[in-house]
Amino acid sequence: MITEFLTNEFPQSKCVLEAIGERTSIVSHAIGFNELRPGGTVSGPLLMTVADVALYAAVLGEVGLVALAVTSNLSINFLTKPAADKDIVGYAKLTKVGRTLVMGEVMLYSRGVEQPVAQVIGTYALPANG
Image (tube, rainbow, N blue to C red; front, side):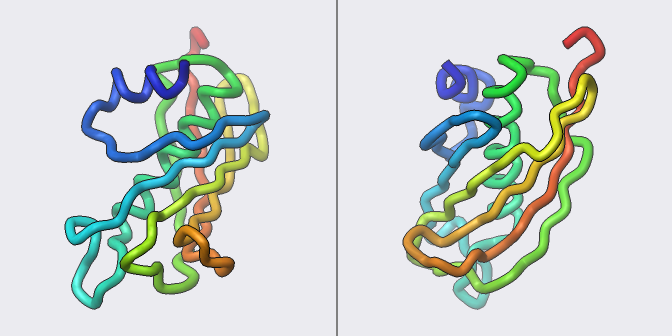
């Protein structure tokens, strides 16, 4: 249900929803030439996209298909250089679910690599009428 919603509402996205759980989601994005920046590393905007989609999917899984839930804050800490030849995978976990704000954390990894490439903290604002 969430996969179809994301496909319909964001057909331009190349993110793949791999799993949804209780206050969690896993989202991935394939890495190719278009996702790299000079120096052979994955671009920051792509990492932020994966994190944002992962948080959004976790929010939808928790509060329902609320199309007008919007990102109100997204902060990223770059930890290590991502692998240029591996998918980026984001593991989202919601830390607080309120009536108007939902907060969460996403850890981003190059698929199959133990060390995270980034940590993202984000907040979503929910519409007043839910």
